[in-house]
Image (cartoon, rainbow, N blue to C red; front, side, top):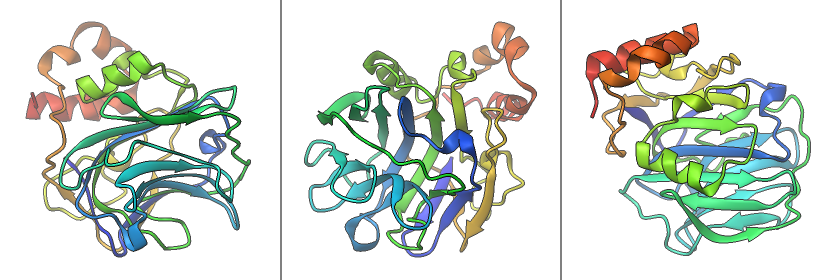
Amino acid sequence: MAVSFDGTDDYLTVAADAALDFQADFTLGAWIYPTGWGQNGFGRIVHHNAVGNASYSFYLNQADSNLRFAGIDGPIRVSSATNSIVLNQPHHVAVTVTAGHVAQLYVNGAASGSSVSSFNITSEPNAPFDIGRRSDSQRWFDGLIGDLWGIGRALSADEIAEVAALGRLPYRFFTSDLKIYLPLMGPTGSTVNTAHWGCKDLSGNGNDVSAIGSAPTWADDPLAPQSWTEGLFGGAWAEAAAANVMPVMDYYYRRRRT
């Protein structure tokens, strides 16, 4: 399952929280299935912005059929390889920024494009975390987004490859480093609502979806199969899982997606 954005006026917002005010040493990742490039050819996956300059923006770029991650206002950005994003196909996308301010993009588990050093991101406190648009109501995302997460450290290339291959976050990532995890999965066809666990932040930080624009819907997704099965919900996983992870475990136990 995933959230379907129409590329016109659909979006989700997470209220401002210091845990999402990333500046260095972090990773953002998601599964996407773009059906268009978004408004003006810049479909926003995530945009964290206060009034004025962007802190960071993770988005599609039609001109080069690729992925971009931008820092402060201006040309400071990193791009994946040309033609690395294909419409109507699933992609696992991620970006890391190290404590040494080196940014790198990953597409389908592999590093893509050239890394950029001295990648600066300004501190923009009290900024919302928008999904599916730029926060000034522009550059809407067109397609599906699922399993959106942010981690307060730069994952290694091997770790990102593991996430992409598994189709999920390994349980060991559910630590204090995990700043936000929105599964963005729900009942087929129903309008997205903030009460559903798919809009709840399962990292434990409580960074739930706080506002919904227009009427995005839950959709049967053509994303890579999520390899959650009964076996993952026994033993150490079940014993160690935080209370707010249990609904996810129950959901997948019943669905038995393989």
